[in-house]
Length: 137
Image (cartoon, rainbow, N blue to C red; front, side, top):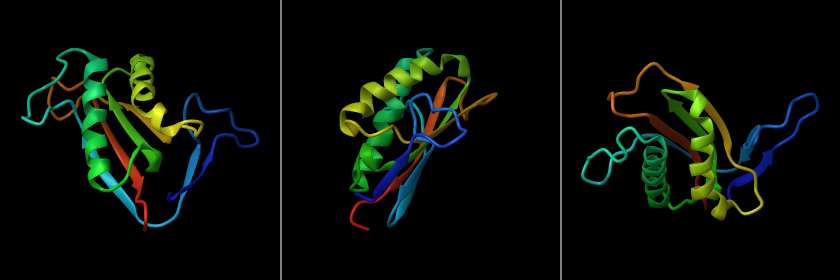
């Protein structure tokens, strides 16, 4: 696996709540574009429902990661873009539901969450992108 280490503690730095401060990788990286809550037919999933939209965006992201020959443990970093950062716990719960079984005892990937004024369409509540360390590279 090309993710070689996940740094969760550093002297003088508070522990990250549910993510690694840094992730080291070896080999090739893939930069996955932001994914939103559209199903395979392009229809919105979860109108007004942040948990449902997060679940669909992560499902889309996972499908792309799998198409690259990788899986959740190969994700080095998530970038989260949300309309309401105060709802971060909803996002964390869905993220953990979807990725924790694959990560086992490893820390979650490095992560940034940014509150934005708007996403590309007004019905979107969240977008997530990823940097993935490709296996076998």
